[in-house]
Image 1 (spheres, rainbow, N blue to C red):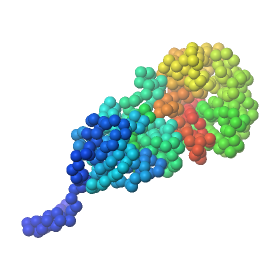
Image 2: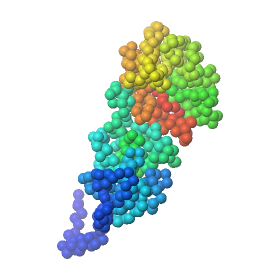
Image 3: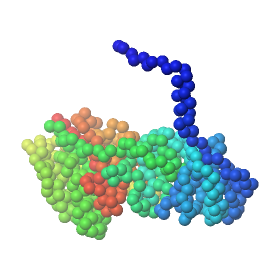
Image 4: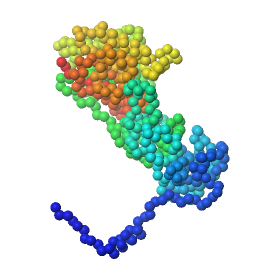
Length: 554
């Protein structure tokens, strides 16, 4: 291979070229020069080392590191000293002042005080710009390594080189903030069994939006599909670190560059010869308006459209439905919707004793694929919503298996005494008793040794007592081989599994594909049918993800 060898320039030509580059190349940007000497002015270091009393007049000199002066923003800017080994900063509340620019060195006259516990300069009398230059280098931080040091860098420009993951968006619509975590999403301790670590504080940071106003418009950090899913990631986050509302939070000075968090496709059809079994919490599918579900006809139309988009693509042969209104009309309407479009026809399993709760469990199946042999309910008083057990067989009547739809007592509505929260949510004793009764009842009702699949919302995480008891009774998670990394629900930034398909060990080898369809838990609540920005399609049709598996016939 021939190489191209450039001709050698004479030494004098190289010297002239270097001189020319020196003349045209801009000098490296430096920090803005110090303001003219003034014995009265203080740096942020000096001011914070010996803070004066409230409302004391001060003159502060520093470099602007973050500007949030818009009408809907913080109403000021951050000043920082230029001592890289002792970075300190301070917020200057300056509504109505002329805009300043990051990198400006300012001398500010105002009064020192505190706002919500944070020191700041306010009642600004004058701002003098002494020059402009580059920003101080951000302090590099990493979680959880530097979790105990965050308070040392409050109001300072910082950078997280690491990848941070959106683990919660419950305050995105209301306050424009996201909960981020190091090392991936945060798991509920009831999912992992690490009950001593309830909040993962050392791994958390709040990404704020440069404002503390409620109901930001537009909602920040949404992607081109109008969502910001749990699981989205950002690397190299840079901004001003502060502490407010009981949390360390970062106001970005550079737009976050998001990765991941793509919406999942629907599961592929079950393979020939396999039967798909699914469970879905419908989050109050009520035909009666103004009760737990839709409050208006328009909301009901959106709710039905979303639930249709969530259930039909599953193409399940049997599906248990949780939180269905306890009225025959709700069951009838569900079947009407499922059969209204598409090439699949469903039939409902009539619940012989649905109980008196406002919601009930339901079950639907494909009569062209399975024959319903029988259905029974457990009326034991331990259950608030009686489980429904249906036996299915081939179209020739050969028995195959049973499926029981269940919905255990929720963790909400805690009592003041008795079955209170002792680390696994309130009503844990009741849920554990329900699990014990369920296992006993299944054995009582079992037919000819046929397997029974538990399908529903147990309102308990994988490492909690109800699931432990069911495992001891021989029930296995047929969907997730590693339940400590499974989820169907996200609550206040912690992911975990509440919805299950459980069965005996001998069914495990007959399970082909299986999973959760992550259309709900990762999506912000305001995309729901009753939210401020309801999304088209299945997204946030409920607060729980549907769970499914493909079961090979014998």
